[in-house]
Each structure stands twice: as structure tokens, then as C-alpha cells.
Image (cartoon, rainbow, N blue to C red; front, side):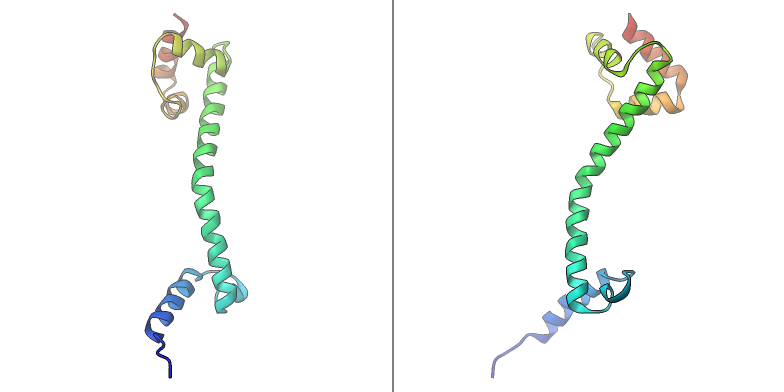
Length: 114
């Protein structure tokens, strides 16, 4: 008779089934379906942690672009002028200034234009 570690295998399945909580239909209560759904979900989660960073950067760029258009500049011209003026502010902070502190953003634009 072979020895089978039911405690460990049950614990492993319980862990997976707990992760499937909230899924719809058989994905939440049938082991093989739930296991596949969880694996796929984990793949998406891993991939999208990287995609999230790209999407935020794109959003910041759009916000900066919209804000500098008021000062007759394009995004690329503005970033070029910032680099030439040796101003090192990242896009996240620039976008925040553009949205929430227009006076401070104007000061940065004036600094870049000099």
C-alpha cells in the first residue's frame, strides 16, 4: 500500500479553491475548472502589473501635453526645453502639478522657456 499525504494535497486544493472565491459558475467550486481559472488569472495579474506602469506613464504624458498646450507648446517641445534647462522632474510629478497646482506648473513652464 502506498503512502499518500492527504493532508498536504487537501491543503493545496483548499488554498486554490479559496482563491477562486467570487468566481462565477463552476469556476468557483469544481477543482479542475477552478485550478485552470486561477492559473490564468495569475498570468494576467503578473502581466498586468507591468502593463499598469505603461498605462500610468501614458496618462501622465497626456495630462502634461494637455497642460502645456495652453502655453503654445507641445509635449515633446516642453520636455526638450526642460532637459536643456537641466530641470529633472519626472512625469508623475509634472502631471500632478498640471492637474492640482496650475500656478506651480506655470512656474515650471516659464523655467523651461528661459
